[in-house]
Image 1 (cartoon, rainbow, N blue to C red):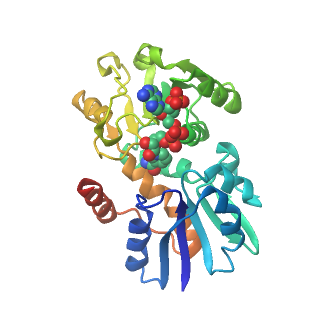
Image 2 (cartoon, helix red, strand yellow):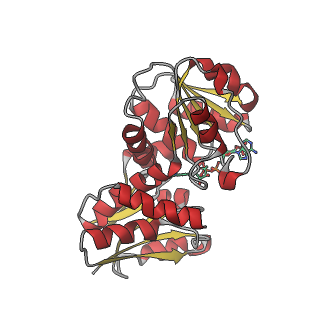
Length: 276
Ligand SMILES: NC(=O)c1ccc[n+]([C@@H]2O[C@H](COP(=O)([O-])OP(=O)(O)OC[C@H]3O[C@@H](n4cnc5c(N)ncnc54)[C@H](OP(=O)(O)O)[C@@H]3O)[C@@H](O)[C@H]2O)c1
C-alpha cells in the first residue's frame, strides 16, 4: 500500500485527507493519506524517517513550509521562487520539494475565468504573506508585466518586489482603491474575510476593465470580497478551487495517477466547509 500524509501544527483542520481520500476511492488505488501532527522541533526527525516508515511523501502546511524547503535536497523551480514548499516526495533516496500553490492558483483561474488574461491591465495582489509569493510567481509566469502588491506592512510588499524584479511594485494598503480602474485581475491573499470577518473594501464602482476577482480565502466559499465583486457584475473565483488544484501534483507523484478536479469533488469539500 502506498502512503502519504499532510503534516502541520496544528493539523486537525486540514481538508487534504478529504480530497486525497476521494481520489484514492475514485481511482481504486490501494493507498492511504493521513494527517500527522508534527511539532516544529520534531520536523527534522520526522522527515529523516519518512521514507523508512513507508511514506511516498507528504503535504506540508503551517508552520513547516520554509523548513521543509530547506530540508529538501532537490528543489523545484516553484519552491525556489517562493522560498517554501508544500509538497514533498522522494527521487531515489533524496527528498524533493515543490510549491504547488502557484500551479493551483493559475489552474483554478484558467478553469473558472478562462478569459482572465485577455485584458492587459494591472494585477493587484492584496497581501504580502507566504501565499502572495506563490500568486505573484504564477502571474509573472503567465506574462503579467504590471503586478502591484498592497500590504499593511509595506516592508513585506517591498521585499516581494525586490525578490521578483521590475514587473512587481510595492504599495501601501491605503492606496489600493486608487489602482482599481487599471486592474484586470484582483487577488486577495490576506486573511481578511476568513470566517466572514472583515472585508478588503475594494470599491468595484471604480473598475473600468472588468477585472476578474479571486480570493484565496475559502471559508466561507463566498467571501465579502467575492460577494461585492459579483454584485458589481464581475467574475469571482473562490479559494476552494485553488485548494483542490494544488493537491493534483502531489497525488500524481505519490500514487501515479493524475487526478481530476471534478464538480463532484468540489461539491464534497464545499459541503464540508458549509458544515464547519
Ligand atoms: N485557497 C488556497 O489553496 C490557499 C492557499 C494558501 C493560502 N490560502 C489562504 O490565504 C490566506 C493567507 O495565507 P498566507 O499563508 O499568505 O498568510 P500570511 O503569510 O500569514 O499572510 C497574511 C497576510 O494578511 C495580511 N493581513 C492580516 N490581517 C490584516 C488586516 N487586518 N488588514 C490588512 N492586512 C492584513 C498580512 O499583512 P501584514 O504583512 O501587514 O501582517 C499578510 O499580508 C489565508 O486565509 C489562507 O488560508 C489559501
